[in-house]
Image (tube, rainbow, N blue to C red):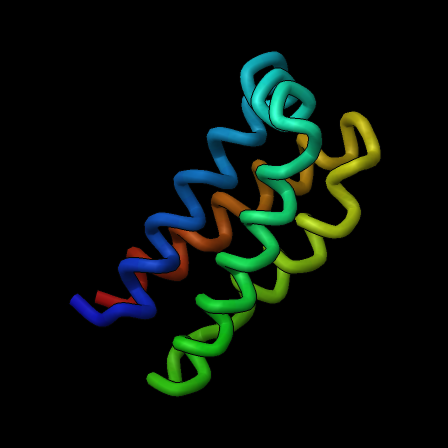
Length: 95
């Protein structure tokens, strides 16, 4: 399995975790919005790896946007769920 594919699985799973209504909000608020910064960094790293390996970058771009606008309640939750699904579908199709 390529590193880009592994990163897509990993970031997709984290995005879905953050998209769970009460759990994701508790994680984000409990750590002072730190997880959003960590996810932003992970998405940028994934984007760079995907570009190097010439694989799809759509999920990582969505992840970067999600990490930036996820401070908005409910919008962030929906965006985390959408981004998680995009990343996991992209990772599954890359096999």
